[in-house]
Image (tube, rainbow, N blue to C red; front, side, top):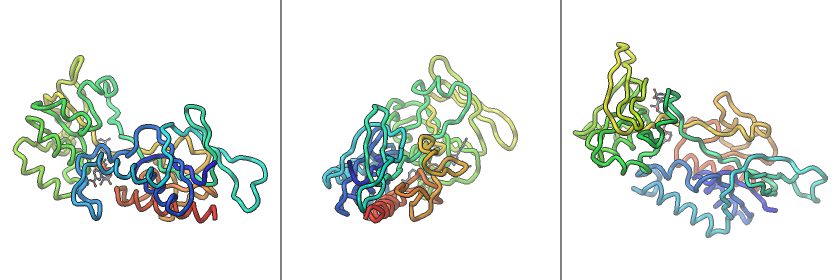
Length: 309
Ligand code: NAP
């Protein structure tokens, strides 16, 4: 029995754990993969207030160690369902929630914080899955080193794509950045730095329409969205960085999801289900950043602690 069960050990979940522990309550954090969430794949974080530059992995490790040193228990097991424990609650206590994990373990607590983050969006074209690990990657920091001296492409126009392209341009002989529009969502400063790189070429208004190569990727076919013309670009690697999608379906019987699958919740991180809170990229929100995930963690933790009383 614990006070708050936190599902997800990314920046939102671990920040929530820090705030729960410092509020004098006990947090158990359940994590399906490794701690840190998406930020572990970010080569350099330069926009977290108070830290000029840090790798995503270092940041995540420091956050994890901080939560653990404060007494949070982090368990590496996937939460698969949440149920209300029936029967009369103890005098003056809220009802108990039970979280069941993939391994069959159960955890009981008075409040749950869903901080499940989001996973990489797939292009959804033929052979994408087959060629994943054979040229296709969703993580430049993890796999970039395999492409030293080679020609690669990055698909996407957000911060992840721009930062991945910057990172890869230091290893690879040539980096194409394929983006479906003229304008980028990523920070202008990173785009400017990328444009200044001699081994980077932007391929704009273009989508990847075919993956070529047997048994490994050897080229991508891109289609110009304006002219409709196709072009084959020989590459050994394709880094897909086209955003994220939430993974909240296991909990749709407990909390309402918006049409895109994010947990419907406002800035107060309450879900409409008593005792269930949410934090970070998994909830409906306008800005999904490290700072907003950490901030949500604090808000959700304090709301959960005040709910428990
Ligand atoms: P994102 O900002 O959502 O950008 C996704 C990009 O992929 C967009 O340019 C989008 O194009 C494109 N895209 C989406 N679906 C596509 C499809 N089916 N085919 C082709 N292109 C597609 O995602 P992100 O770059 O992963 O970033 C997610 C969040 O994390 C953002 O808030 C970002 O700022 C943040 N982030 C921050 C840092 C940092 O602070 N250091 C690092 C990485 C990410 P359109 O623009 O045309 O929609």
